[in-house]
Amino acid sequence: KNEVEQSPQNLTAQEGEFITINCSYSVGISALHWLQQHPGGGIVSLFMLSSGKKKHGRLIATINIQEKHSSLHITASHPRDSAVYICAVTGNSGGSNYKLTFGKGTLLTVNP
Amino acid sequence: GAGVSQTPSNKVTEKGKYVELRCDPISGHTALYWYRQSLGQGPEFLIYFQGTGAADDSGLPNDRFFAVRPEGSVSTLKIQRTERGDSAVYLCASSLGSGQPQHFGDGTRLSIL
Image 1 (cartoon, each protein chain N blue to C red):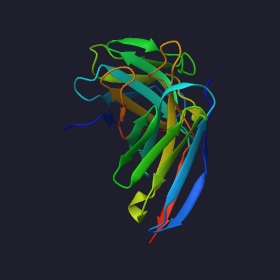
Image 2 (cartoon, rainbow over the protein chains, first blue to last red):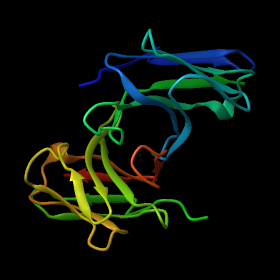
Image 3 (cartoon, one colour):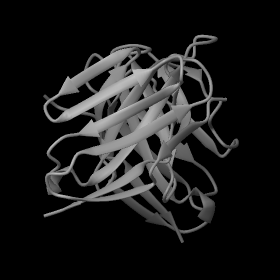
Image 4 (cartoon, rainbow over the protein chains, first blue to last red):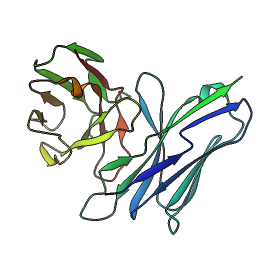
């Protein structure tokens, strides 16, 4: 079973700061996902990546397959970025590319 | 367009009762997933449907939990003889196919008193 670890568990930043959230996993994967969850439960998929780097607006996600590590960066952070950010992976063995294994999430609070 | 819809959004019931949670996926999505999220934890996989059949139900915690998707669209998660430990947010997601990005509903918050 893949173990997904995120750090930090909690992060408080001032508006405008550059933010990095880290994710590591223990076993080879087919893809890594970054998800955003706001209070009340709704989850939104931010990125799905299997190599390299992806960018969407102020969000950047990178992955290093050899090191089994990914980072989510937020540039020019804003209070509306406050949410829980969750890293999840899908396996690459036995047809398990559908089953998401989640980290515990990182609670980000951006203060004005 | 319409996203994944889950009903009810909240459910409070007494220990020992039977509950049904409904998920209406995005139209055309053949894959459907149920997850359970306990307080302070990431979601955990329960079951995966491809079409009408449960392709993987290995995450269901015990035989009190059952899920169906009779016409390959709407799915119902059923919990018998509920226990206080079943209290959690139950999340549903759908995708075009296996390995495609999953789209989540807002979840059903289940509280067992």
